[in-house]
Image (cartoon, rainbow, N blue to C red):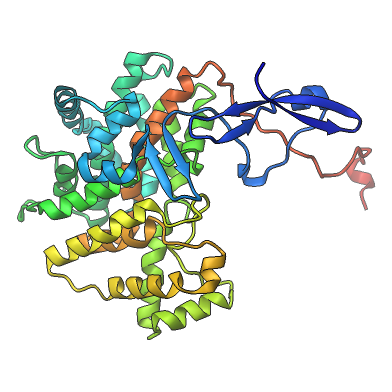
Length: 429
């Protein structure tokens, strides 16, 4: 017999099985709670609720640890490409050179979108947010590929995974071109995944964009570091929608829209806006930190603190180094980067932030890198979406291979009116 926890409620005691993870994390299986005791757990935001067993990503927020399939994020960031990480998340193992080359070739082939899909962009307003466009276009892919819609069919799922990984950079780049009223740039077979995205984003018929390897590598780092992050809001959304047997395209489009929220993927944009406020208001970093400590509702130190991490976000360490390398290579002096570094120094030695375990997160330096590359603020969250795509796909596939998966249906504690008698409209005063 395994280990159990006992729960006593109103004179009745039940035993809840203990579920142990490979890294020592522990869960109590409460699946029989309502049946046995007539009660449920109440956990707003699901902060203490495990929705599944997963073998994809491990996070230890107290220690500042992030691993994909057992591999430390810093090692992956240093030694792998984004598509290599994508294959790791999807398959569970690092690929061989031949496997990676074959996967890369197939993804590159799929970067071209159906020509009819290109006309979709003409229907969107020029100022449409790229995330709104991306979510809509991804959802529409199910109309173009009805033959790859069965989430239980492994071959069809692999095909859809390659399509989504390949087409999202094209969709995002074209949404940007549409907003400028410029012609779309098609993917080029001679370019890699990240280089192709930059090429489609910035090339024009009269000026070919030459991709700087340092810039491409910095963007690839951002993709790698965002590739998955356990059961976050958007990944959970993909799982919830997919649990109804909705197809992969529909489920991923829901994930895109969940990521759009300013409390999730929009945080790196908010970070840049905060740094610009500090600069434009003529504040010193210390003055701004002091304002944050007054806890005025409208003043927050963006890029600090995380729902999971109570230590320095391991992704932020990688991006801090990359930020300096990119700006140095481009010959750019960023006043915002100077402010960010001084804000970090001031906050990390301030007892207010130390006691609350508030440390820099991945947004703190990613926004500065994206701005240095020349990517506009409205595109920041869309860049995040490209990076997060492998994680969404891996989460979707894992859920459909899990025999314990059921359609997501949370319970509630009802706090509304008790039974009332109906009053005909003529008698209501």
